[in-house]
Length: 242
Image 1 (tube, rainbow, N blue to C red):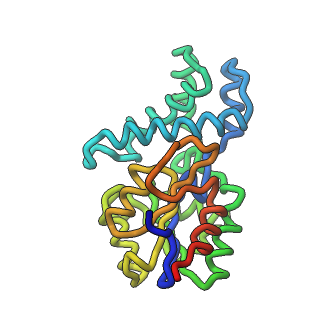
Image 2: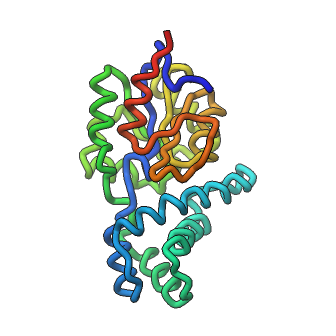
């Protein structure tokens, strides 16, 4: 397995959702309680950890042209997997939560919360003299979200799939980032939360990648893993080839 860092490292690229940003677990839990489901924000978070692995398996089984993470069908599948991991099987509740989710806080939706270690991770990258950027499958809102949370100030640029017209795991979006940064693939590392989308997409463009694995849910993988984005950055900075 290749080290995620080499002496030529000049930048770290990040996913946004489940990497620098997270869903608002507390508001999801509140809505579920209103629907008669007794759960906490922590319950929702842990269910999401499990659901993302199942989502990845579904995405990885699709042809790349049908593997969009931004489609309504994928969003519905993802939400349904989270509810399934919470043990919610009542179709009335499932439908009510789906209707609420679609109407909640457009266009940002539930992705309005910073990961607790996101700013520390970005500070560490910048303190090491490296560039930092985001490559995200999004609906045009991710730059504004990052800016509103104070994270945009640490980034050289943000590539939003809806703006550039290509979506991970398509290697073209990673190549656009490298071109924008003026780097070769050996000079950047990518950090993301989905194996088939982030790791395989980055690897296809020649970048090393670190997979985020909170709760150790992914099992053995042929790539470095880390429990959170700060740990991923520390790993990248520590593994310098001689």
